[in-house]
Length: 131
Image (cartoon, rainbow, N blue to C red):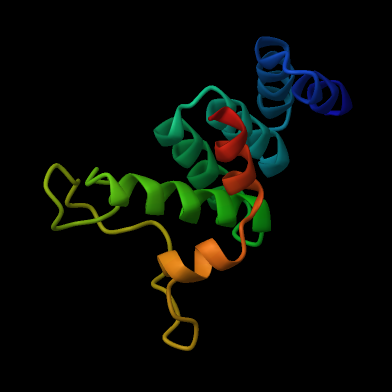
């Protein structure tokens, strides 16, 4: 994992991806390695891939804050472009299967564009860096 992080830090995405994939293959329950794969996908500009890996990491560890943030932010970006997500029944092109994640608690409202803009996170900083 340390080698993967080092490779990411210097922009060696192929090498980082290889290391994260090796860790994920050796330990299929390692959500941190799967988040690493999501970060590699995001760095390459593959937002749907980043979202897919983040969702996979959340399935492994629902309490992983990076996976949660990355999944929510990528979903927000894709919805903003009008893309359908597989876990959203009723959207054009969406699968009809129910969502694997639990419904949002009514006590915590979903993030809005204003709240996301007010507190930029890692994903926002990464997206700005690509511009």
